[in-house]
Image (cartoon, rainbow, N blue to C red; front, side, top):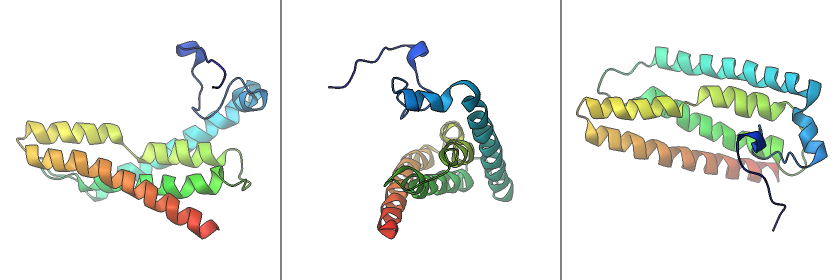
Length: 160
């Protein structure tokens, strides 16, 4: 059993896999180190959000229709997370310390949109498309999980 961690907003880490009790990990988000991290996440978020917006402009969804653009964005984003994490976070491979915050949290966090997914499900239900809403809700969740697993598995195999 590990050390007991305090609970509540004051004890929450910026990154859930950063242990703020470990001095070397706490330094990642302390003092002047926080500004490059914040800039990387922010810049990546802009890139990801613009890419998602572009996808929805190029592939608009008529009312009551299956939201294919958001579905594909979320599944592709999850697949890309599956590629990114083994590349920058596993096996002792050196990566720039801002690679994961920029690409993972920023770009892919801004690109994927599970809030729009929830709104799309609600809109489908409001338009009497319960079957389509259910297919979209379940299909997105399953496809996203499968995409991240397949991409991570393939990436790990390719790196061996």
